Image (cartoon, rainbow, N blue to C red; front, side, top):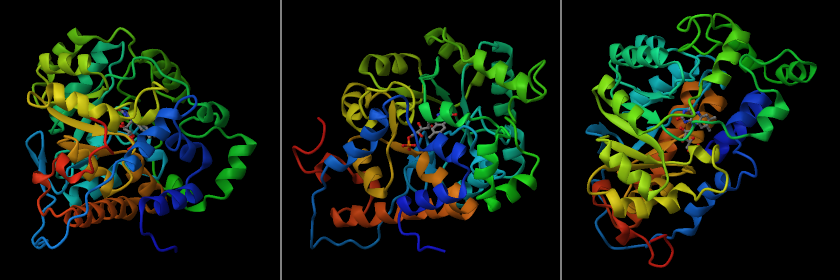
Length: 383
Ligand SMILES: Cc1cc2nc3c(=O)[nH]c(=O)nc-3n(C[C@H](O)[C@H](O)[C@H](O)COP(=O)(O)O)c2cc1C
């Protein structure tokens, strides 16, 4: 077993243990992947100010996101098909997040259903909603999330139509994998994954199968989903969804100041500066570059969160310094899950918290809630 010291180690182990089709599904972006890469590399350009001879004892990374206490300002982003990275994936991730004291967001496109995750955890998880053409299905999903006592609804706005990821097409991505010769050969090299999958019944989209008329098996499911993402989604829909939900509402996928202002007008509790981890508009600005202008424009009126490219506690600290009240990790925990199951997700959170805590101290601060731009070296960050 290799010594795991950072998120890159978890990524490398996940690459060995997860079938190629599902590993590639996570570690890729749309088209040229330029936005996917920029999300990470733009963090590297921002430099921190080293401070010394300041009392660094009694530190705290605890904060709040939409009023909820969090052990650190890092939530787990909604990721589709997590239960294909590792058997029972969503339940394992939810448990790790609960034990750590950070929110987990369950995707509409999860393998384990809302009810299943609720039955295996005590903490309130958050639910991410994709708007589908079938509005009755959406109403039922919102009601199911309410019945499961979800703590917030994360409404994703940046996937009205799907961008293209070349690798998914080349790998013939499907849930469960198609029994082609290439897939059999690849699966033969992933015994842990196969054993896990043989030991679970959770191998389909749990929020959908059995909850939509006519969708009872894999082929009807793929036809249904392909035609369902709603290209007509608009701000009036946000209004009815907000009303029907009635709880904390977080709007995900805002990259533009004008959209941020509309998000404020919608009465949402928070917005997430996000480009879907570089999986939708290839050529969009990285999230960390888009963040400061949005914080400047609406930061006093709405809680601003961000995701995209976070691979370390240093990245979380930089996002905080540029005004993000909360951040989300996607691939960082997905790699942990693929590498080592629940323990790997816990490991990813531990790595990030340790990096965050130590880096904050080396910048001369002891409380995450006091972090602002003054910890950054002028001229190295987007204004
Ligand atoms: C494999 C994968 C699947 C995703 N599925 C969803 C999803 O179902 N719903 C959603 O709102 N965002 C989804 N996202 C986007 C994430 O919520 C998040 O915005 C992104 O992963 C953040 O970037 P990071 O992975 O660099 O941390 C997905 C991302 C990945 C990598």
